[in-house]
Picture 1: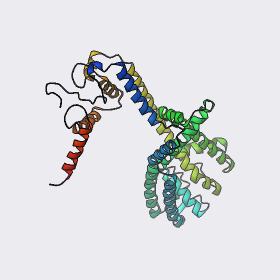
Picture 2: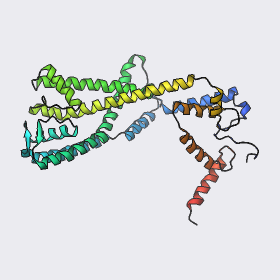
Picture 3: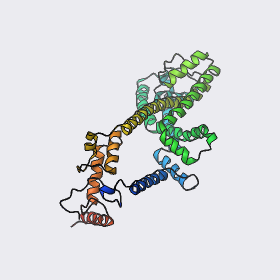
Picture 4: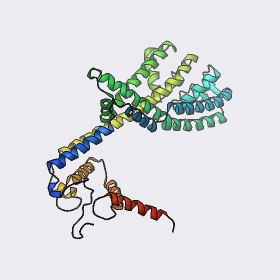
Length: 357
């Protein structure tokens, strides 16, 4: 128990710390730096350890849906839609080629909101069916396909960084560290390259297969991937619509992901500027008073770290309050520190409270 006449700190000190007068001791600072380095190294696996890389791979797979699940959902969705619109093909008007292909093509054009107008429903029933199909299709793209595209981009990030640093012979640990540091920038570069390839392939295909001029081909590509879909030029041949089924999906999703990553990059740049400003900002007496969490007139290393993290926007006062509530629950003897005895007592209290009387 701590003496009642001493004010206890609000923030947990580092394990085994000395008195406040000795906290700036060289040994103390070196010990803290070693601890910080150990945390950093543990977050980036060593490429020489075979067990590390599969672990990072499994984390990525948990964050993103597998392509097998995406393909199953997409095929099921398109199959149901294609069946419905194939059966209603005689109630559709516009340029027709093959019954099944036209049905799948109409499903893709509808779910991506491109809406060329070259093939449209002509009865009340087919119009209502198209209305229901477009909303479910947009939800499918937003919830599943965009996440799958994000997963694909992250996988390509590794190849991009390897290509950029090929002459430096960097290892997997360096690649993961670089990805974490400039994740948004590499995402933008990767999706931009993919988008250029999609635009190039679409323009060439329309010029060769659909026999459009280069300007009309590029015009059709731009109006398609932006989902404008004016309809004055579109895919009218059987081969063109077979190509459009996949190309429209990849094109519209890639452009949406590109704008998403640009916004993410802008946010990351602003965050880095804020962090730089906070780190370069001179400490004043007002800052000292704000950073003094336990109101004892001095700021120790944990107070300083928490204050700087709050200034950087990394954590909020609510986050600190939640952590302090947990700390107070674990600090059973209210000594301002947590020991093994405190953990044992806290666990026994939880068991007692959970046991019915």
